[in-house]
Image (cartoon, rainbow, N blue to C red; front, side, top):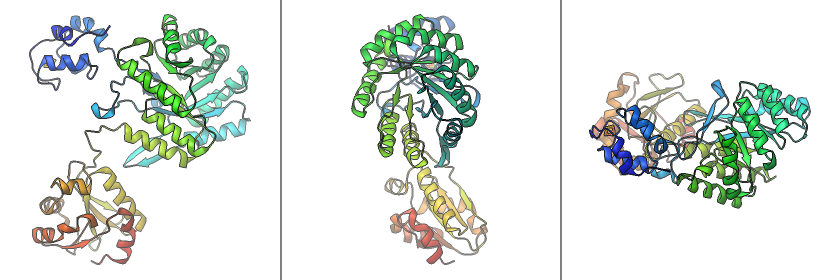
Length: 445
Ligand code: SF4
């Protein structure tokens, strides 16, 4: 049973030292009671108080660790229903399915392809986390063989999916020490699978028909000694799955312990485009693990982009370091382009400059990570801030010309920048996609 704010407050040091980031101990206690902050944010709490507050500090959604070493993925431990109220913490793990009914070459090829599904986006690598081996053959031997091969060829942590606890036991033993997520699709086998999970120190995903049936099942799994559980509400079509995922998330955040676990969702549509839509939807709301057949890069990019966007902190724009960047072999004649230090803006410009093959300087002005128009509207991207950034970068010592290119959307700043900096302004394109053509055909030093 969750503690109230006042019950938590009684256990705190009551010094109001603010080290936790809250103005008073009471404010901290109220946030903790609401599940929005964890006890470890207070560095002064005593061991006795920690023990007393264990139930309050326990996350409403269990943390589940899949894989080991560099392949380790953590899911769960979320505290919010709506991202804007704080943020989502643990990005959904994306798994691509491979069947143990494939022949060895086809299986190895698919697993290798899954392991290579990664992209660079706004300065970050986004990639698939898991390979899901599906015991479609129904037999233990091919399942075990497929598990070994898929783990080796993909170099990813695994989800082992079967209707049989005995088959799971054989494949789990083959991946000893790699901590795969075991998924048992037959509810009647769930308790036997719990024993397998306990013996192999693995997390366990269980399936039941809807939240009510899951709530009845999970106490049996914890009773068998498995705490790290993942829930499959059994739905497969988009609408029903979204409803089930939302219901489980709501109930778990109300500290309903039987449903306080991450959720696994499966794409089911045979249309490759719809698969990507299904997976992206489950990533956004509220799956901890998404299993899909979407193995093509064009399918996976939107899924991983959705995940990257959903799991950034909405109160902290993704920013690059505000400074002068060199793209290519720059020289005294190279153009100077100015943009903001919002990651998406910067990398859009950088990508287009690279594509143009015209070496250039890009000056990322500190706008606290906001985009060109937002920064301009809030007066963070103006003649003064641009000129200050130019001076700080010492660009006048690097180029022989005195021409600066500003984004087309803020052409209105031209006169101010010229007055403030003494440089001539060339108005660049409004969209980054026009930069390549601009540099090749319009830029003049
Ligand atoms: Fe109180 Fe601890 Fe926060 Fe200090 S860090 S204000 S003692 S809750």
